[in-house]
Image (cartoon, rainbow, N blue to C red):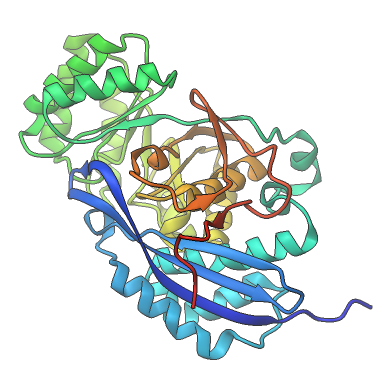
Length: 376
């Protein structure tokens, strides 16, 4: 019988990475990734790494909140058996850590990374959705978009050219910032002119009113633009508005801010408020994300994988999650391209927009560089 294995150390330290330019969404802009790095070690020497990426303009979470939640876990976690990661995740949540979704994500990521490395298997296989999905899974079968953040019309045009030069086909456009629908339509016209064949995911981050949403749809009709998805234009919980938006526009609507838990996913399904759900591990962690995927599958809802402003560590974890689960129609895992430096070795490989994790031997494969942040 295999002996139990225990957690011998757990740590959380700030992870601050400057951006090449501010990352703007409807709720505001962030000039740096002010994240948290989590380190965990098992008694056989296996180490796991996790990242919390709070994004104040998205949901109000801060680096300080994530640090406090994670540091509080050290007192009860060290010495515990590690095999049942979901039970430990539930305990972290019940002890208050779950109040900060990005902290929950970092905690769980470090655990599953250590367990997968100990088992000698890549994280995508560790998280695979059943035997059939594992056999069918392709570790290079995910295509990411790249984002045009809020800003000026000229900035949108420049960003579009840069995205096309990278060989990325899908473009996500942030709307709902200053200037209202008219300004966003001018930006969308410039993007469409620069990349006329690019599928557009238009993301409002819950910052678009119902009246502006109608103006945007009518403006897109005039411009001859048919978006791939309208992602969370309306405020969280406005299920009737989201349903009406899909009916009025004729385009699929994705729920992001409206779905942070499986219970919220069930509410969206019951209200027919989305055709796609954006899974972000930073909302509530891996265990809750698995439950949301289950709700979406049962209801026949499409799946998107996304994230906050994250390094290659968290983004590779999300890629492994989506590839292991299978069936993700859209991916928004581009933020490592916005960072001015990379304090890590390893991670997903990108060819144009195509993400591959086929080369990763165990865990998510990302480790801090010697000069980078380390848990102490």
